[in-house]
Length: 294
Ligand SMILES: *[C@@H]1O[C@H](CO)[C@@H](O)[C@H](O)[C@H]1NC(C)=O
Image 1 (cartoon, rainbow, N blue to C red):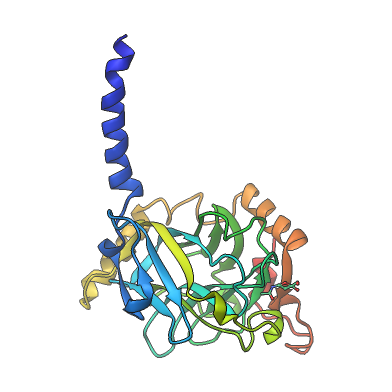
Image 2 (tube, helix red, strand yellow; image 1 turned 90 degrees about the horizontal axis):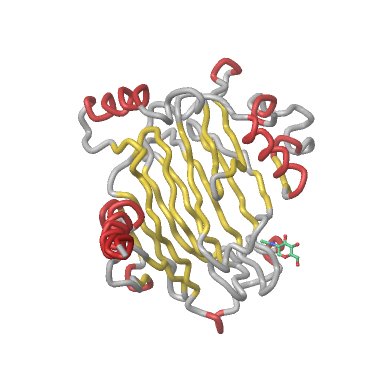
């Protein structure tokens, strides 16, 4: 009997927990930065947003603040059905001239055919580090979590908490690292039909519009926002880095399980890897590659 009494209480705290931890409102940390008329907020608590694309425009959102280091994520359910030609991107980018950028780009496909997830890393304005994989699940059937873990030693690209890519600090090999530029978090959906699906063979079928990608589970608790232009705001993030779990062992190196993840990805899901594109780099592998594949 007494157990029954606890149920409402449990429910109450459960709901509170949901509000506080899982139910972060979109507008707490983000705003729509283009194509507002093509977005939707389907739930009243505003913990979910949908970005839409039609033949007039796409849409996108951005974080209010840029972030310097952290472990962050969001949950995304991609455009279902015939999404050929659509590109849904989720990325972090600085606004300086020699910018840094970390990209997830989801390339749609005709019904029943797999999306491609393309990732890229720009440091000091230099990109050209594309990798392409298939996912091990249907990203349109339900929400999956996508995120980054970024500290002074490495950057992880995470899908449902599995590492699909690592970019190590290889300054010792002459490769600039992403270390002094805070980056905003962006997402957008846009028309990429000239290249995205089978190299542009499958175009967007506008009969299917609007194309909607859904977002929820915005998680920035463990990331450091740079909230002003003052030097002290960045300094705060360096200090936080050395006090946080993301900036401390064991997060400064890959765990054995993460190494297994990367090998599994490479063996089972890899479509393209700039590191093995011999023609492109005339047989000279970019220096960071030696360290980024365990
Ligand atoms: C779409 O499906 C085809 C197979 O029909 C596949 O070759 C291609 O990699 C898939 N993805 C994209 C984005 O083109």
